[in-house]
Amino acid sequence: MDNENNYRKSDSVFSRKVRAGKRRTYFFDVRQTKGNDYYLTLTESTRRFNGDGYDRHKIFLYKEDFNRFMTNLEEAVNYIKTDLMPDYDYDEFTRRHEEWEENQSKLENGEVLESTEVNSEEISNTQGNPSDEEDMSW
Image 1: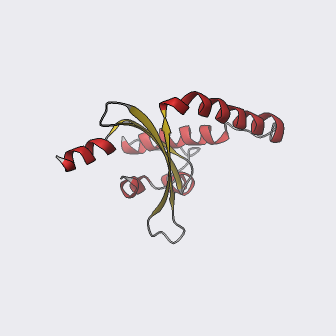
Image 2: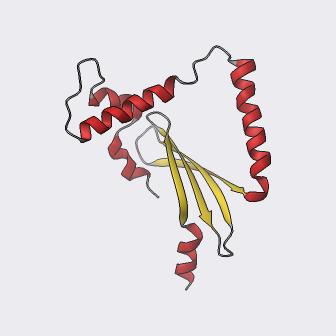
Image 3: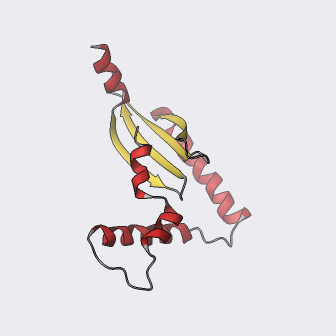
């Protein structure tokens, strides 16, 4: 019974992964407590420079803090975007990631990339190697 409770305690009921470059990935996991309550874990996983595993940092966010957390996160991000770095192109990495995903899909489907598209080696160098996913699983 203890093992079942431990498994249930850490079981994710919803999960999203955000790749953030070659070495960093964020995980958003909704987890359920024994009392059928829910909380969010935010995990940053960073590949170590020596290639020997990952460093992970977690934040546990509980329902009573959701609104204040989101309000302050939005305020902090907007302050950076509007006051500190208003000329920065915040969509640049989103476009690059969408391009990478599109090219990965084409490669997986056996399609040949056009000469103007990024080749798989360049994709791996800018976004991380897809085979690294196995190393990041919990």
